[in-house]
Amino acid sequence: MAKADLSVTLAGVRLKNPIVPVSGTFGFGEEYGQFFDIERLGAFCAKGLTLRPRVGNPPPRIAETPMGMLNSVGLQNPGVDAFLEREWPRLQGLDLPVIANISGDTPAEYAAMCEKLSGAGVDMIEVNVSCPNVKAGGLAYGTKPELAAEVTKEAKDHAGGTPVMVKLSPNVTDITEIAKAVEGAGADAVSLINTLRGMRIDLNTRRPILKRNTGGMSGPAVLPVALRMVWEVHNAVKLPILGMGGVTNAETAVEMLLAGATAVGMGSALFADPMAAVKTVDGLADWCAAHGTTPKELTGGVLPWA
Ligand SMILES: Cc1cc2nc3c(=O)[nH]c(=O)nc-3n(C[C@H](O)[C@H](O)[C@H](O)COP(=O)(O)O)c2cc1C
Image 1 (cartoon, rainbow, N blue to C red):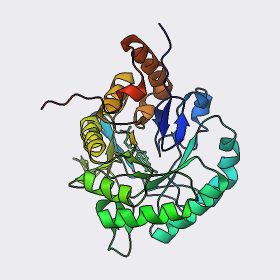
Image 2: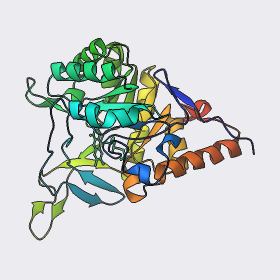
Image 3: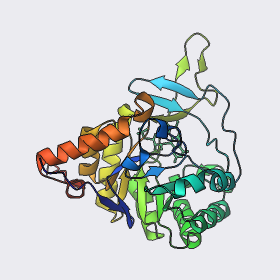
């Protein structure tokens, strides 16, 4: 069986295959390096960074759900400067594009992080717009088209040519409105979906299991929602998509490509099996060879009923 060409190009960045561990589930790539050669992946999104270090939310901040999980980690991270000082020198030498993920409370914070990260030479910046905008009364930047556009423009203006990918929240009525707004503001790509807001309750204490009461849901249970949103966004904008949400193996990765993704993110699946991403790379190679196709050809290839 001839080997399929698995390479894809996402916002001008060449990935040797479309499989990308997603932000918050792969740390800064160090721990997984003990299990496999991380250069076998297409790229990876680093843990979400903020301008200053954050300790995150109090525990419990993880709860199990049927076929998924809830988390309220709260962007625990060492801050962008510590990332550049302690992690970037090791990551910079890898034959693997590294995507830095950033969150801010104000457009100025996004701008400052974009300047630092693009100056250091990260391959792509993923702008997480799920953070509250203090001025707009805590409303997440990703829930209003004009706020999402404002942050996108600010990031682009300060990214010095480094591709900017905006990570969309699924907690909106119409995700295509936000996608169109960030496309208009100059985004180079979009990634979706971030987690869906959810809750679980302990029957004995009658308290929510998570200390923050609610959290973000991810894992296999969200796959149909993610596929629907990727498909809608693919039909609404021209931007390439890093599609994620519930992907666990080659078959679900192919579904994500068919829905319209150019590359495919995997997160919660790695907690169940640290090898899940490389197994998916191998499985995708076999699947493409067996079907005489490539990831590039699969993107957007779903044949919807009339
Ligand atoms: C424990 C945990 C931490 C996360 N942290 C971040 C983060 O820092 N920034 C971000 O943009 N998304 C974060 N996410 C969301 C994931 O990147 C991804 O969008 C979501 O989990 C859906 O993919 P999955 O079903 O494959 O896990 C986190 C998810 C989990 C489970």
